[in-house]
Figure 1 (cartoon, helix red, strand yellow):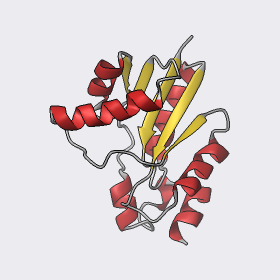
Figure 2 (cartoon, one colour):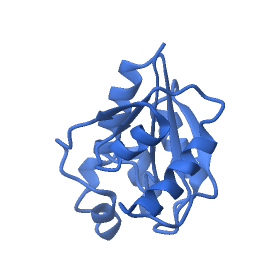
Figure 3 (cartoon, helix red, strand yellow):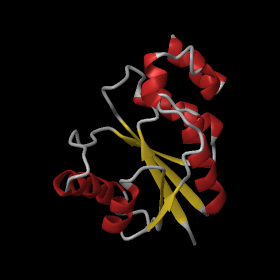
Length: 150
């Protein structure tokens, strides 16, 4: 049985995230999405979760209400982040991690799971969308765009 997961802020959810989620759902018996709280956007955690649940009802959603603030590719930051993930997934026998970022190899290593690196063939990032949502409207589903711009 394959149980995959991905993590993110999804602030906002965009086509790149969707491609990653769809791949995870297709390739696993169960797929978990950890949505981390963040201060980079005023979009509530619950709103972001509702987007994903609406679009992907078979996904298991986990709300990350107190994620670590320390990020980085140094070993200390990686340990802080992966310890957080180990705690979140301690009761869920995940065996695959899906991401399109370099940190995926560290998550996979520290959680002893397979690293599935998803191609970044959709050239978008949430930072650009937050800075100019109108220019990147086509990278978001209507449900996301409409609640994101309000």
